[in-house]
Amino acid sequence: MSLTIDFLTLLLAGTIALALIFTLTNGLHDASSVVATFISCGAATPAQAVALAALFELLGALFSGHAVANTIASICELPMTSDILPVILAALLGAVAWNVVTWRFGLPSSSTHALVGGLIGAVWASYGPSHVVWGWNELLYTHSLLGFTKVVISLLFSPLFGFAVGYAIQKTSWLLLRNSQFSAVNRRIKKIQWFVAALLAFSHGGNDTQKTVGLIVTVLFAVHIFHGTAPPLWIRCTAGLLMSAGMLFGGWTIMRTIGRGIYTIRPLHSLGSQLAAGSAVAIANILGAPVSTTHVVVGSIAGVGAAEEYRMVNWQMGREILMAWIITIPAAALTAALVYFLLHIFTGG
Image (tube, rainbow, N blue to C red; front, side, top):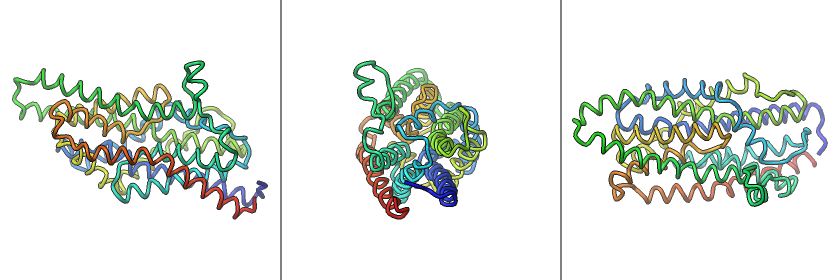
């Protein structure tokens, strides 16, 4: 596909703008889950929780490194030329479309799934499946995690890790506090939650914003504007601000789903689930593993609920969310592939 200079500039600007819009929709999804239990248990008002999370989301985006960005950029093997701009644009359109649909219905699906699906669909439609770094052979023969395999394993195991840690924390907490006066304990727990919520927001900001950062750096590298290794500060700062803005603009339906729809959350449950989710996402940042904070938070809430009374957990809600998780990657991939074909026709490629 041959691109003129003027059209190239327009396409570059559109791709970067759409990447930032994706970050905003990511905030509608995953950033909402960061404060859901914090609000529902009465530890903070919505305004307080959102303000705290917004600040630490931005700090996480600025100071959590770029290992996750590198992983996202390595999912596909693409020529570093301007020809990849329609591919990245189509991938982002597929991801944004799915995020908007699931946000509209209040379903806490994964923005990471949507982005990965969009990338795979657009790359498959443009260059073929051989240009997707599947990573299966490396896992089988060298036991190393690369590309799509690394992302899928991260997405699968992170909520299970959240469930297990949440379960263990809740059991341990009940054992340690079994003779305590819970009215006094709850007051202390609500105060401690401010620090734990800040940790979760920082970890989330460091993980999810890096997915957008990785794509923006890729397109800037492809058009020879950027030649470094570390993402520029302005990209990280902008992504962090938009992630926080997404939380402000409309994640309330998903907050209610997570904060009330899975298990009746009290301060001790909220603290346990936040600790479990925050530790899982922080470890993922160190490993460069892109995960869905929504997945992890849902898993941790189910874990603390199962530890106390598994029959009171809304497993039907869990099944609905699981179904959304399963279909997100193929749905976003198909949407991105269709968008690429339309762009291909429109540009006369």
